[in-house]
Length: 235
Image (cartoon, rainbow, N blue to C red; front, side):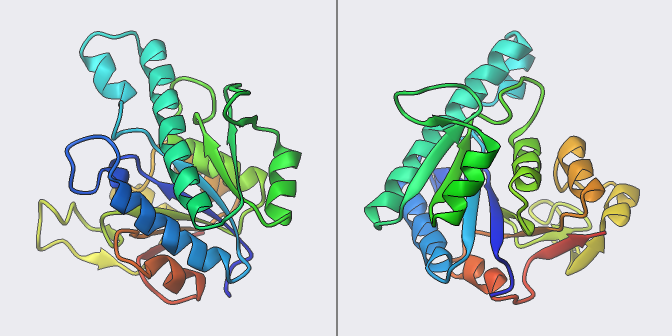
């Protein structure tokens, strides 16, 4: 397999499936099966999930809510999603640990970097919830930060689009997909891959990012095998 340790970033919206909001249990189970297949190959996997299917802090701020309050509510939404994926994985007999940046002792462990690394080494999938624990930071930033902290080989950003395009392919059918692109080219062309804090963290730490379509079963395994799918962002 190409990678030893992977950080998988999933958006909260991806868990909705065909629903308008909330969690689609069929979609979560599909993700769990794909993750287990890669995990069974011996790859260590850490996961960060967004919370946009339940609550979006930025949207709430626009309607008048205090931004800090809204961001903390968004962090709690990520924990709900993390628990849903944890449950699906454990139903497939995969050992997991949920670690959060906000203490919730009854349902998860507090994030401690050395403990997280030890869990990965002991063949447990680690799910990081509650973002960084700080307002004004996205779950993309959390994914980049945790990947660096646990020394992951790559950040895999699973989306509903099969890579990075010159424009939004859902709005502009003529948009062209990049197979590979540098961090600097993403800056120069103003492409929306991750928020700038997350993206800069990866660039400064020479951590590659692959954007791919997680909704297609088997894609996660193909990337783990080293197949060229999605878009690779490198230094």
